[in-house]
Length: 553
Image (cartoon, rainbow, N blue to C red; front, side, top):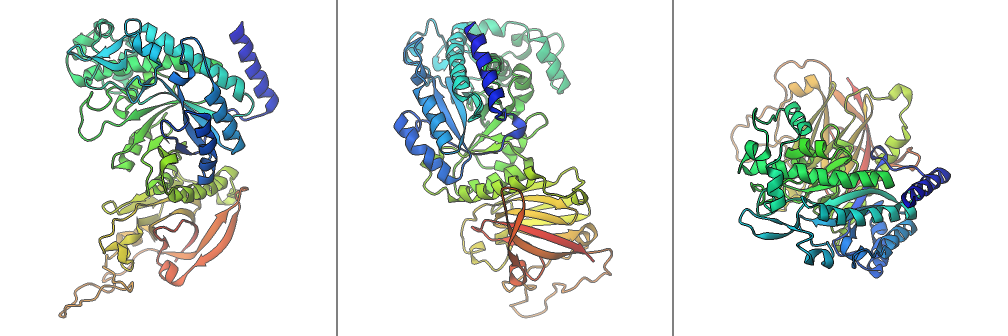
């Protein structure tokens, strides 16, 4: 009766308020995740929330700590949860709560002491050698019941507090689930499960994905034995099923989007050396099958190769959300790339409250807000609507990954790091190149918006690009001469007859975009600023939106 009454109150509140119900399709998260201990007191929360708003975030990712919510079994304290929601509203911020429940970065460090001490009732995962770990076993129904009970109370409290206002827009269930030291749990309960049959639904999903289990192999042990990657599949299935049960509880109480986050399997590590069996890209079929109520599997990206990691999670049925990534001078460029290339749900550097100079994030988020204003208001007139399978792209360059070619119909955009231009001394003086990044949006057949910094874009027709003669330019912008004397064999002009048409730049305007999506002219870039009509560029450390109009001749 109590749960029914709560559900009715939530529904009545939502209907009476007219507030938009959060869904993945309407999320636009310019986020930042607080460091792990940044919301453990009301004083912490009061101090940090205004700072997050000043940085330019629209959403803060905040832990919800089991040990502080239920310090004594069966007694709940939601003071910190209420404070987060209240301060977020005061600062016009949205909140994503991170459930630090049974697991956080594999470990059960946020479980309360009464849970940790009773290892008989709440058993630990074990290694093959029988070593108990600071990791609660997901095979224990007692572990699940304790976790689920407090999670249920948390979701009920959030629903009562937040109904009709929409401050809480998403919930992360657990945090970076995964086994360490071994690929799977070897506790007695886990061993029994390993001898059970592989579920038919999973067999079907794996077969459909081209990863069929060998014929005649009925149990997990028969199919995988001691193979660590097979053991990881076993563990992934049971973690996913555990999470699915929590997700179903959340759906019944307060139906906001749900996601899980993954610590990457990087640097050549094997399962157990990285957190085995988390919601990793190579286990996506298992996780999607075992936890269908989860909207997104999301990567926490701290290693090099940001573009590669992001691409692995931008697959059909899995909108891209980056809930954690290294907070650094390149965060802003990476955010622009993520939204431009993948139309991401959101982007969130970790421990943003501890970062000394978040100005690059502030600048990038300001541009992204404006681009969102444009796209969400559908400013394009009916005659200038873009007919294309892809109308936006992301750029991200560094010292080794300097160039990207975008082919858009008959238009070819050659995009490079701004330091590839010969006249900036930082390109060759030993300076480590800051990453350059941009979000390119096509708004008409011959028209683009480019938002970013540290990039240069040239425009050619396909035929023009095919006939391109590459020349090394000098610091004055002209073809590099022979400074050593003798003959210079670099061709100054094209030797074969030119075929087809060329693209020219009609104009490059610096613009801003208002809340209603309309563009405001700020300044025209011409002459030296667009290299006499050869390209559009935004220097390193400059944060601009360019409106580029092309023509053909």
